[in-house]
Amino acid sequence: MEALGAGVIRPGIACDSTGTSSCLAMAAPDGEFSLPTVEHVAPGRRLAVIPVSYSGGALAWAMSMMMPDVFRGQRDWTSPVREAVEGSAPGAAGLTFIPHMTGRRSPSANPRVRGALIGLDPVHTASDVIRSVLEGCAYAMQECVEECMPGEAVAELRAVGSGARHDAWLQMKADILRAPVVRMKVCEGALAGAVVLAGAAAGVFEDVEDGVGAVVRPEAKFEPTQDPEVCAAYSDGAARFRRAEASLETAW
Image (cartoon, rainbow, N blue to C red; front, side, top):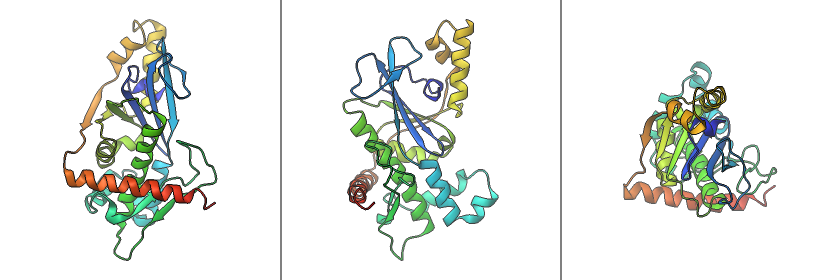
């Protein structure tokens, strides 16, 4: 339903639904995906759904540890998270976070694996920890796109859920996945999807695609950075993430 609320009915458009965890969804005509799919509500299409990581939950954990007063006293963390990200350069000063705090879900499931914060040094700050958590979740998403959707070009990633409220996180995902990220006007993707589906069923819309055109709207777009230093920092960070993740497979 959230994918529908993000307007995921055409190839190349993917949905990033981030709340306590994250989930990727991408649509394509029947028979074009090489991974398991479910039937899409739009006729003639299939939907690939990939559970990614304990993302928003990991951010909540980091905030409770690094900024307990903010965690307990504020419902809206967008400004504190933005300030933390701005206080740490891309790459989080070499700190690497593995977000599998409740087990690894994709590309291959391993319920025994747990999260990790690797490379801690006395110079690291609370900002470095929070940035590393956000980066680690984005690296996990990048890994899922590359390994679960090989050959499937993501032309645009549409963000819904509570995680979509964090501009800094969306920009980070655009930079790491090398694809534009669009925050939808209605972040409650399931709500927007329900409106589309109900309207199509009631005859308010001609069909689901007509409903998407009438209801689904973008709010903000985040383009991938062209800064070579930022690109290099995230490339190095992604490589560290993969090495660290692989080493943890045998730790439990």
